[in-house]
Amino acid sequence: MEYLNLFVKSIFIDNMVFAYFLGMCSFLAVSKNVKTAFGLGIAVIFVILVTLPINYLLNKFFLTPGAMDWISPAFANLDLSFLSFIIFIAVIAAVTQLVEMIVEKFSPSLYSSLGIFLPLIAVNCAVMGASLFMQERDFANLGYATVYALGSGIGWFLAIVTIAAIREKLAYSNVPKPLKGLGISFIITGLMGLAFMSFMGIQL
Image 1 (tube, helix red, strand yellow):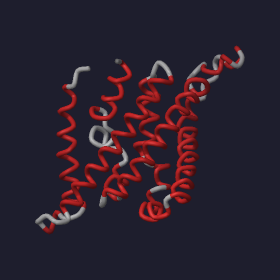
Image 2: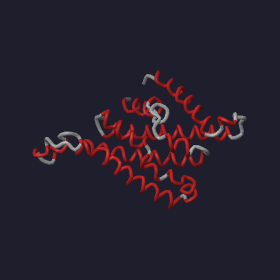
Image 3: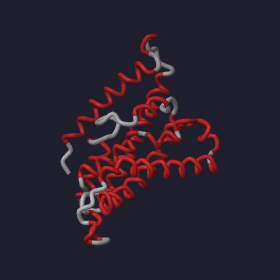
Image 4: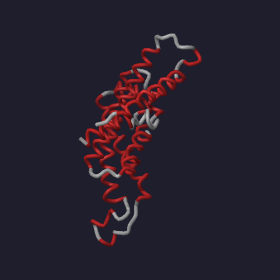
């Protein structure tokens, strides 16, 4: 039940886009059509799902103060927490490179449509934010970290696919000229953020 609670909360209540407004660059730039948004969303889910558990293990066994006492008592007072940002980013960049190679190999059309935004997953603050939230919340075990990773990725995926579907419909709508493009997208994102706040009342 605790896993389900964390999973639902990370998708709807702690949504990376609508609760924290993380990953907004690619969220707005790649959400012009559903197919491209879907591909990027799947890539982000994969990157978060792989990197967050790895970063959890690195944080638990190497980066937190005294974490390396399992190697030797001489390392009991060693504090490598100042390396967290660098190591987390290195792991994310490595996995992103792997995703980029896979997409280029098996879906050249998607690779072409995503363009620069596929390698930019490495600096997508939603991916980095998930690892930092994991560190801040100090999950009890790897299972919690993995569930949180999956929920966070699905939450970002849901957000970008939803806004992409809306923007496709808006292309045929009578939107005032000053609001066309990013203007109306910002307004819709804000309204969706307000809508997602209603999920705060969920009790599991």
